[in-house]
Image (cartoon, rainbow, N blue to C red; front, side, top):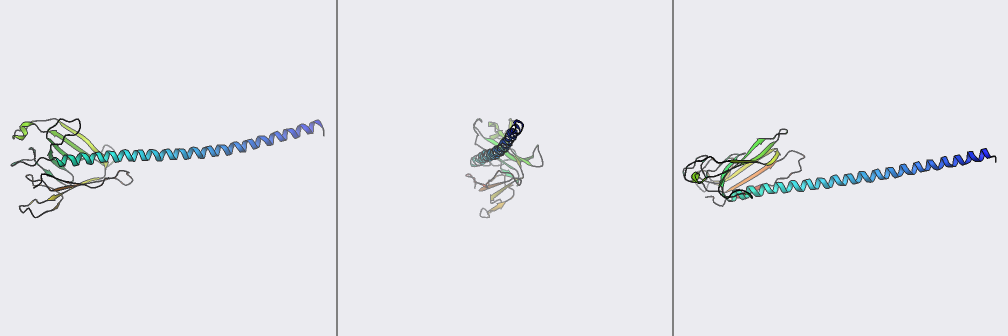
Length: 217
């Protein structure tokens, strides 16, 4: 074997070894990519669970507020008008009442509360809005005074909101039933049910809220 052929054989072996190294490196790279993709997928699942849990908490807080406010409703007074203290009225998508429930951080007292819908800033969805107005002492005596209003978004980007009222609106108390609106301002219903609908694919869930009113006739 000449020196030239020996050198050529050595170069061939080194070239083959480098090729093997490339194959091994590519295999390791593919394995690392697969592991990284799995980790990212797992992270996305964890974030989705956290987001769902946060959403559930917020929906639960909204239901707690509505339930507490309705449980402390002020009964209507004789001769109450639409804006007088204690006036109670509602339609399929709006509800107005007076309550003594004050959320955390608010001044104790009676509040006029209005639940209503407004178009969302994004898309064609709706926002569930609550407007709270502190009732002044003069309001109870029949003198209306201007009070600041606090308007907040309870639930953003919903597809629909529906309220039902159970009670008797006629002169015969035994004629109980569900109504899509409540026009008897001097009487409050026995039960109120509230349903909220979300768009398809929205992870939020609203379980029907049904609240008995303690001061109903």
